[in-house]
Length: 258
Image (cartoon, rainbow, N blue to C red):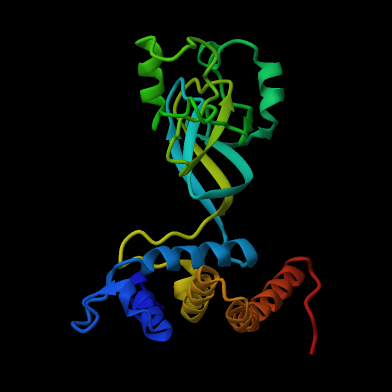
């Protein structure tokens, strides 16, 4: 089990890149570029290795009138639910494309009669690059009210995130009351503070260091070094694959004997 600080310490020791931290001699290991490499290593592991801990649920309360929510670190949406506390009932929403949503609800989304949401899409888009200058929906709406952009209508499905850190979920019809929204999906691992853990740093701290060294070799454009680190990583991930297969077989009722 390792925190970001502990991963950074071991990565610097193994790579010999003491310039990626400050005050190495004082053993403070303050970040000076190492974190970016470690985060890239986490993303590499997330994108190349399935595991039992990659699935998670994002939960947020909806208020009456809500129809769009932003989610950080989202990779894949599996299922979307709303929970009606008054009815003590969980409702599974039907996935649709953005095009299907627009064909089904032709009015501005904010003007549609409110009800319990029934459908969703994760195809929530930004404005084109020349127009994508708004960090929040509130900023976009304020700009339209001030007549700053060259458009004034039909922007209800726009994510408005010039940081590109979020994805969106569009729910229709707009909520008619308070609900709890649950997005069952796959999310990127993320370190934020030195005391943070991720799935990888808890279960396989060695892989965090190996993946960080692999990314470092990518930056060096050293294909031989990349292959060596990748070979070491695969020795670990092959075992993860075997565990995943065994668990899937058990869930399917095909537990192996012997």
